[in-house]
Image 1 (cartoon, rainbow, N blue to C red):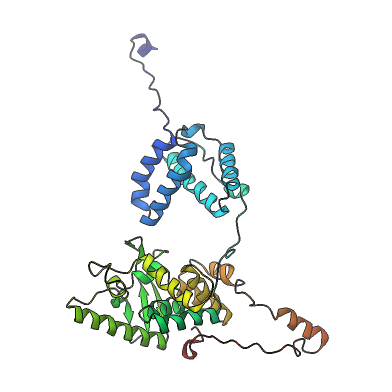
Image 2: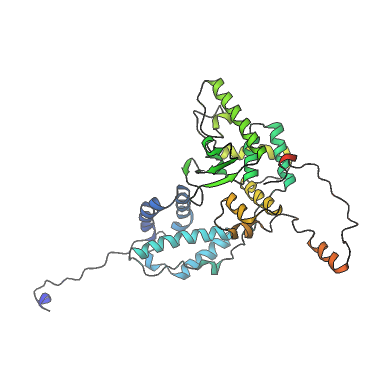
Length: 357
């Protein structure tokens, strides 16, 4: 009362609440730049530009309600976006709201539990795989028509390494005596970072794969010597595959890796698949062969064994085709497959690598 009487008492007005657009710029410059990988930052920028800012950019953070988020989800789903894509948009908004809660700007995150409003596909749903016969056809085509490409495709199919991990592989990562390599880095659109889970991992290499990589190293060294240029540190240097497009000793790019696969698939005469399908195929082949699930998880670099089992365990076409016949045989006391003719396959993986291990 004394301060009021002396005109010394003042009530400070709270700072104005920013719009989502304004606060997202602060979020990207602060938290995102410090904590997120370049690939994740890129995803946030695309999501903000293409979806979030057009819908909410001019809205005050505290004015955005849960109903607004539900309507956004339903609208994007109606526009034909995949459920995981829609959830990705909402998760990006959720991170922004959580940061705003920490800053004391808002008290509630209206984006929480978005899965209640969109169907989430099961792990592995919609993934594409190659059978071992199809994988063998691609390898045989590469070896016959594109021998330089063969080592990269073989390494992918026999280790399940991600495309960026293959591109970022260096000769020093390979232990020739121990027959293994260490995945220490990942390439994303030219940016080098840590592997997806943030930790290096060891991958065992089959004897045949070691021989192919050693021969590949000799050929890369010979070409470097003939050109008068130093040996490159990258196992798959761009100059070796596309000399006309390369200006130095940089590593192969993602589009180059995809071109290598596309050419081999076309020659093999099988359907087109994305490069990541080779990783899916490796995991499926290993599970089908009865290999230890923990070992497969470690080789592939999955975050948990649940990812390995739930994603790949039942995805190989025809994996369980004989299950009903085995049940019938037990119930009827005889084989239910006696009259079925044998099926011959014309194209398989090379004999000495047929068993992926």
